[in-house]
Length: 224
Image 1 (cartoon, rainbow, N blue to C red):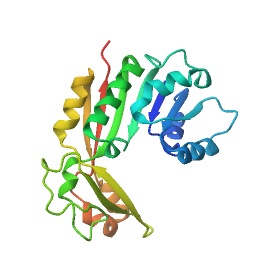
Image 2 (cartoon, one colour):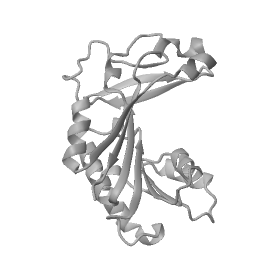
Image 3 (cartoon, rainbow, N blue to C red):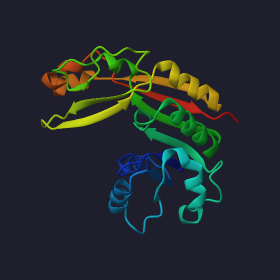
């Protein structure tokens, strides 16, 4: 409640709207895509100062914040935020690029601040069954030897739509190393997948990916 949130790689603003619904006082979203920022702005009331969006590459997070600080209503990027989030951003970045973003997120947070990010589960590289609703084109690819390799795939939606996806593969150690090198502490790691509720509601749809870890969700803390 009442937190100022930084949404890194905000896309069309879905997560920004959700954190406001959850009680955040303000959310600032950045994205490299001009089209996504335009879409996010179109969904926010122009007079609602709780939402601010600007175009910036994730690797220039602090620079973008400082360059736009008057518009965003902050004095400085450093130590301006209570919470930062990055929802399925790092699958588009190399390990080195991810490390830089995590470090800049650390600097943007207040002491005691929280950083939450989600990524495809590293074991998804082994999920290439042709009938699965979430799969990568990763047959014969190795867990370690494919680090930083761009791997394409698909996600099927319940209405039958097929969406093309892309993930730059990383190992679990890549995430852990990046986290600790930035100065963050790990509060929690959750392996997300199909729940019992999903199976009750749509058993046939979720059958192909049940009992598999699909995503990782990290909750980090910047020490005081």
